[in-house]
Image (cartoon, rainbow, N blue to C red):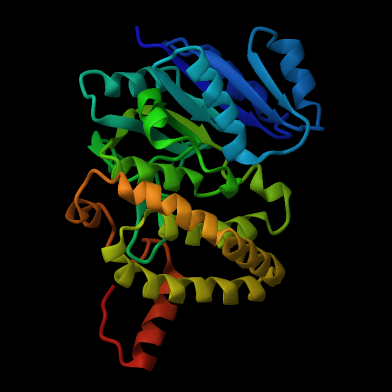
Length: 339
C-alpha cells in the first residue's frame, strides 16, 4: 500500500481541529498525521497534546503562515521516505474515503503529480472547490465556488490546479519542482505550485469520489485586512514567476486593469492601506521572483500551446463587478476585445 502523510497547519483552530483530526484518523487509507502548529494561543495546542498524543506535532512559536508551515510537514514526510503528502485545513472535515480515493488516482499514472478532491462547504450545500483554474487575466479561481451542490462535477478529469486545503502531492514531483513559496505566506501559494507542476510536465487530477467539507474563511476572518493584503501581494508573483514570456502581452494588460479595480474596491471597503501595503511588499520582492522565474521557465517541459489550452480565456465566472468594470473600460477606450 502506498505510504502517505497528511499535514495539517493549525493556527488558533481550537473550535475545529478536533473534528478535523477525528476525520483523518478514521480514514480507510491510513496515513502518518502531522500537525504543524503556528503559534496558537487559544488552547488548541494543549487540546492536541491531551487528546492526540500519537500525532506527530511540529510546534512553531509564531505564525509562519500556511506555506512555511506545510513545508515543515512536507520535509518531515520526505524524511520518512513516504510516497505522497496530503495537505488538509484545520477547519475542514474529510469523508472516510477522502485520502484513499486521492491515493488511488496516482496508481498506474506516473504523470499525475497532484490530485484534488470535491471540496464542499461545511453544510454540504455548496461547492468550495473542484480544482483551481487560472485565467488570461492573471486571476485564479476555484472551479464551482459557491455553486449549489449537484452532479455537475462528478467526472474524473484533469484540472489546472489544486486547492492546498485538501489535496495530495507526489513527493517525487516536489523533489523536482520544489516546495511551496514561503513568501506567499497564505493565499495562492497552491496556484503557484500547481502552475510550476504544469510547466514541469506533471498533470493535476480532480477526483470527485474524494470528498471533504470546509468552513470557508475561518482562519482569514480572524485578521482584519488579511485577505486584501495577501491578495494584492501574491497575485503579481504568479505572473512574474510562472506565465511564459509569449503569454505576457496577453495576460499583463488585462491583469493591470483587474488589479487597478481591486485597489479601488479596497479603498471603497476602507481597506486601502492593506492593499497598498500588499503592493509595496510585492514590488520589493519582485527581483527575487524574477530570479526564481529564470529557473522555472528554463526547466519548462511543455509547449506554450499546452499552457494556453489549460487557461480560461475569460474572467472568472463569479467576477460580476470586474466584468462590469471591464466592459466600461473597453467602451471608454474603444477596445473591441471580448475577453
